[in-house]
Amino acid sequence: MQPSEESIEVGLEEPTEELLKRLEDLPAGTKLRLQVPLGAVALRTSEDANKLRDVQLQRQLALTVASPDHALIVRSRIYGFGVEELRPPAPPPRRRAVPKRARNAGGPGRCPRSKICWGPATPW
Image (tube, rainbow, N blue to C red; front, top):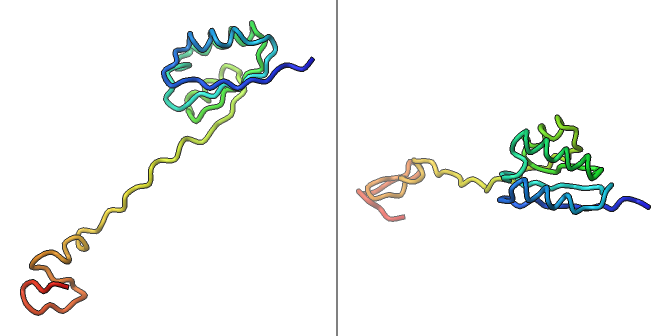
């Protein structure tokens, strides 16, 4: 009989203790992919990693930690867990700043350098 395969997503606010209780309910020998989002509360400390390793050994889990959190990936490697380093979410596109000269070019009393102005405030 082949071991079952599971994928568990860890909630952002889910504490380590709740996660470990969920893992204890898995059948022994399960191949598990634990997906931990960036900024998750669970698995932040070495103590959390020790507890996870204890459950892994007790339940004989083939555990892989998948996360975009580099610190968690490093800690997972140190503790001997399989790792899958995910890309962090892309940052929102940056708003391009308009050069100061371009913002003020058409203002009252200003004449763009590329135009010839006839009078104090010629509307274009």
